[in-house]
Length: 381
Image 1 (cartoon, rainbow, N blue to C red):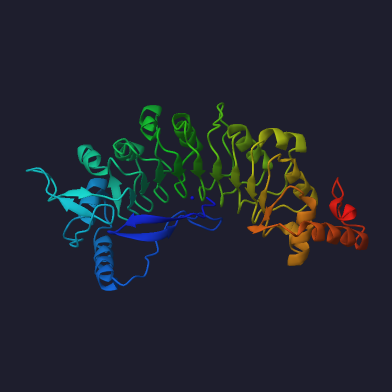
Image 2: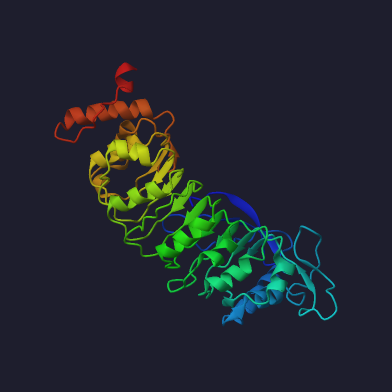
């Protein structure tokens, strides 16, 4: 999952489907599974209709327990399947609050189900202790305490998606945040969650590797006195960051960053020196600056300062608007000698031609801004 480009087999809605858990610069953070076509179409269609009818009839405030009990009830899914193939039920203890004991998939998708509360914690523990990934996007969870009651009873949970739950007013204390300590990937897109809350979570999530903070209307980054070296991937696209000083703070807080996705922020310039960039982003391998406000070749040249940089995305920036697509690619490749992937395409085999083009271009355009180091590979080739 960021940019998450992995395909996985996801157990959802009583069937296994292939889903792309991709978050791009224009993605809302809601992961929508795509059903596979197969020769059991009629049965699948019946199940799909049952799911749609169930969702449409349960859009009000519901508890997490109510939703899983009703969504995965035998009445909605009458077709019994074997272990590991779908959902099956076995008889529950006498007096159980539900008609049958449910065996839920390890990847549980409950998006858009109108969930507002957790429900009975003992039922959550009984039904969901094996769940490793939980998608609660597009619900109406507004209280971290209710979310913590769900998460604390999912002993194997490592991925949590809370996209588009209204958490702007929700406060979180460290005791409550401790329930999230096992989470390794956390999606908080379009929650409008405060930086104060983010810091409380970060202090408890010592193993957090991936964090998504897109569409949260951030104009600034709140700097913490602590650093969080475990974080490898940060998506903070589609906010209102304009000053590189805010990115500087991210480097201070997350020294282990491998991938930084800054697309759709109007960052106008990279104001740090190359020495500062090298110190703050020692492990950065990939950076996405799509649709930023960069307008100077000096900003592009500064990307060379990242010691481990291999991948860059630079579409939609003002600097490149006057160039053709071919000119853009060749001029950028020539200026960034360590980059092996540009805008999603491998550079292999293009570098010498790009550097020759760069030399010819600047001979014909002597007024254009030159880098501090002139490409030499093409000259020596």
